[in-house]
Image 1 (cartoon, rainbow, N blue to C red):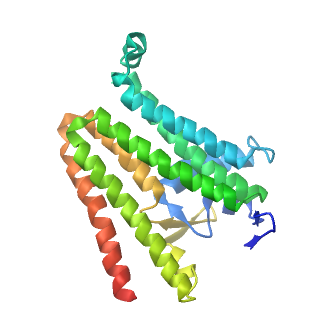
Image 2 (image 1 turned 30 degrees about the vertical axis):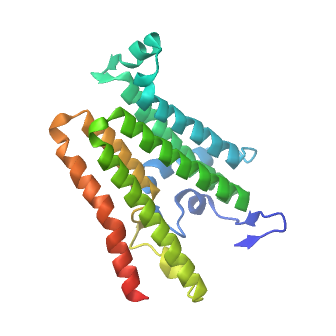
Length: 254
């Protein structure tokens, strides 16, 4: 990967490499739910080279805000809107449908912006920074929305958010240590599971952003199914434990 004088990174990746991140890998949910859609959008040229990846990132943030609004709409004194969002479709409140659709479209666009940049060779350091800002700020407002909507699981939401962010920070810190030791990034980003489907190499990584996205989807689902509320404690324990285990394993090898 080379960086030009204007901060742009030249990649020249193929469609499959750009859409499925075959070099670095991605989470299993991204690879089998979101990235196939990204692949189709690029292959069918629905998304053209003229599309600015940063604008796609911005649109993804708009959908994240819509998901946040669907969570807190009950706090807004607008009776007609509240009544509309409480309508039931297939016996599920409309606000829940709005959350699931907007939240997952947001993450789909988050996968799409990077793929556009990699495929068309328009990746830039500024774009990567903007994408990181939108991701982290978007995660934060969803956390706030979940806390406001579901008072009974405030502690669980907070612990999951802290666990995920602690894990990502430890991974980043470990990467910096490896760089300082001139050990490179190859082993750090090498996935644990590799296989091929239709001659496409899939490299599955664990505890990436899509796992966190699915966690939030699960939280909303479990909160509206009282009989499954006990699973929330299991999910919380999972995210609290992961950074501790990861740290212990990495620290032992330093």
